[in-house]
Amino acid sequence: MARTIHFVSWLTGRLLKSFKLVIVASVILMSLILLMMKDADPPPGEIKATKLSKLSFGEGKQKMLKKLHPLKTRGVKTSESVLQDERRPLPKHPLKIENVQIETEKKVQPTQVLKEPIADRQMDLKEPKEKPCYHIHTFYYPWYGNPKFDKEYIHWNHQLLPHWNPQVAKHYPKGVHQPPDDIGSDFFPKLGAYSSRDPHVILSHMQQLSSANIGVVIVSYYPPTQGDDNGKDWQDVFPILLKTANDYGIKVGFHIEPYKNRNQNTVKDDLIHIIDTYSHYPAFFRYDYNGKSLPMIYIYDSYHTKPDEWSQVLWPNGKNSVRGTKYDAFVIGLCVKESDLRELRRGGFDGFYTYFAANGFTYGSSRRNWQNLHDFAKRFNMIFIPSVGPGYVDTRIRPWNGENTRNRLKGTYYKDSWKTALKFQPRVISITSFNEWHEGTQIERAIPHMTGDYHYKDYEPHSSDYYLELTKKFAKEFKQCANPDSGLRF
Image (tube, rainbow, N blue to C red):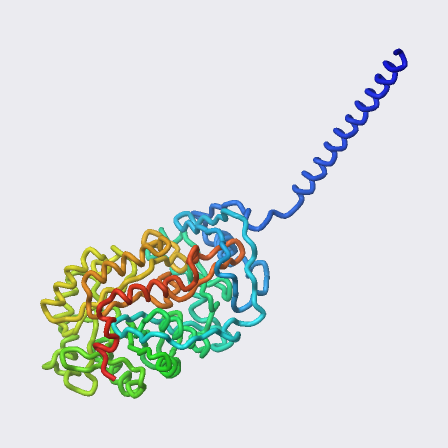
């Protein structure tokens, strides 16, 4: 018995000593693990928020630009385009412009970078299955460029526009974006930082438009040798655009932009140039209305010219009138204020559109006023063209303009916009826009993408085609599209 007790005591002692050794080893091991974690770099996406408001623009500007252009400041060489699985979820990256605060909520995986531009890769382009509806127009911007086709980036490198009040402007970043990954847009195109001169890009655009049953692209126009503040003359884009559009049965109209010293007489010169140069193309858009078949021309910011001056060109008895001549057209002006309605009529315009995709931004873009616009047009036999849009966000070029952001709400905003327009069954519905990436109104394909610690917005949980698919759905509910050739003279 004594031996047994002695053996049990000995065994217990050995076990206790081994247990202490295990505990000591465990503590040492945990300490080593913690030390290694402390020295390691943080995983992607776990960067803490940095408040950068009220920075002075000296050293502060450099810090701000580092946040805006993280890839450039680290000297990382990037490709011209990015392809990524459209279904793979990426966390949202809020850019709180009011405080210029950047934060990342979740871990993300870096996007896959291509070795060559996506426009050079073989595309899956299909022939249109349905005829486009020529009563659905969309605003199209041919002002983008990249080094392969234009020797430099154009528009993707848009500058950050300062606020007009210097006291406000000083709280926001300055500078320009650095493509191909850092672009002047809150969304990132599936085609990457493309060139509007790239034939493959134009082909892809026509395929996308056709898939959505959009019948007319309204392309931005500046007179030859001119361009906007961030772009260059793009007259050479129009021929290939017209030829490719014709392959898909799509028509091309023109949107005259507010260039320097524009007036009623220079616009008449624009009409002459457009009709003389492009009307022989089969895709040139003519609208059949009131027994006439004429080009339809939109004029942006038409209010810059007084009604009495417009009437010189747009009224039949005007001293420089185009009415009844080879250069006659259905001229559509922009309705911003309620008073614009009567001024457009006085000026001799054939109709008006609302353009802005931000509901409530102007009188014309406020959907609650569309009944008044519809009634006015009906009363005076004018063409009312409401402009629907998927949302609005321009904080990557106007960082102080967050209050005018209209979130897409996963497509609900676009649906509501269409439903309101369809209540009036107008002759034409315009879409703002196909590819105005700077203001986040595009329905062109976009993908999840990130640059440094900045995450672009995207269409998820839906696919990159979601807004094209929605457009096609509403086209079927638009009575004018039941006869897609109505209003069109070939």
